[in-house]
Length: 154
Image (cartoon, rainbow, N blue to C red):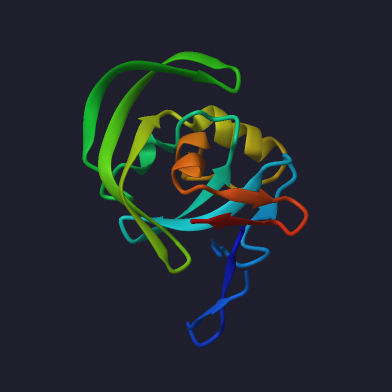
C-alpha cells in the first residue's frame, strides 16, 4: 500500500493514503527540462536540481562555505554532463531538510558545477547550488510525480 501525507497550513500532517508528501508544485520544471526545488543543507537554504541520472548527490566547490561543509579529500574522479576526470572531495554527515522533513548523516560529493550552471545560464535559468541524485532519491525512497511537479519521500 502507498500512503501519502500532506502538510496543512497550520503545520499539522494529514494522512491521505502512507508516504510523506512534499507539497505539489514544490518542484518547478525549468527551461532546460530539469526539475528544480529548494532545500536546506545544514539549515541553510539552497536551490537544487532533481536528477535521477546522477548516481550521487553533489554540491559545487564554491558552496562549501555557504553550507558550512566539512570537506575531505577524495581520490574519486567525477564524470558527467560532458565533463570527465574532475577532481572531487566529499562532505560527510550533513543534514538535508526538505520542507519539514530532515534526513541526517547525508554525504555529498563536492566538485566543480560550473559546467552545469553555465548550461543553465544558456537557457536563462539561475544557477543551482547542487544536484540531488539517485543515491538520495533511493535512500529516501522517493517517488517523482512528473504530472504534479512534486515528489514524495518516506
